[in-house]
Image (cartoon, rainbow, N blue to C red):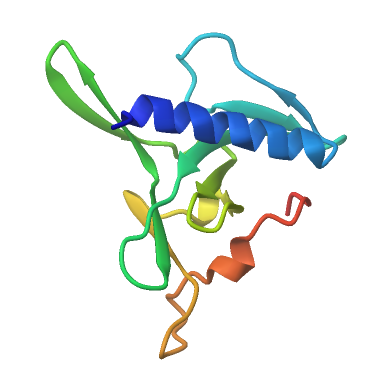
Length: 137
């Protein structure tokens, strides 16, 4: 069984490859001390991007964490990314697609993107609206 660090590293590598294939210049911060995994240059702006791996939470949805979890000196810590990143780039292994979620749209702990629903409610975050098509919104 793979650990969460290996899964995260694979997602980050896939994200870097996807962004470069779309024509962006991508930088990787040195070390593991920044809240963002990649810096994406779209020609006019730099975007601090946190890469996440989505998982199926329930039928027709994907979920991802919008906070970091670490243990320092045996003490568990959770921190949000507010003000520290510009976007999440979420990889969903089940369909091998990426979703670009602006940090201002993200919820505090975990966020759910829905593929289908019996109802249409303003609080639903539709996966199709966040699907990364190669253009940074």
